[in-house]
Length: 114
Image: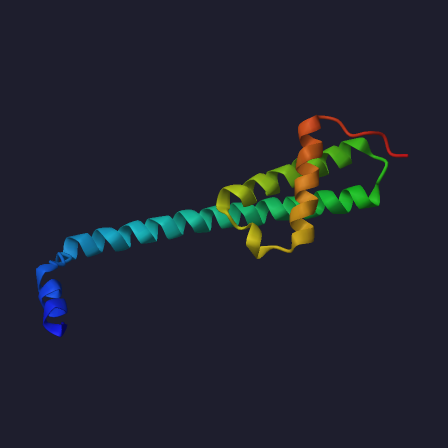
């Protein structure tokens, strides 16, 4: 039985990877990594803008313009997280918060503060 397994292995031909294929593969990997880094830096920028909008709305909770800016910033963060598949790297509370703000931003208005 061992010889039939050995014979099977001999029949399988594993194509040799040429150096050009290896270079192409690593070039594709480098390109994908660079693109991911650009998206992550953009996400970092959006989160920074979100945090500024959040602070401004906390300082002036009755300002509808600031609240809508917060909702728009939350939506931008939410969409960037979805597009980059990075939701798992953030706290669930943060993800829920930006999801809610995304929904508010899509409604185009904010109900008056009671």
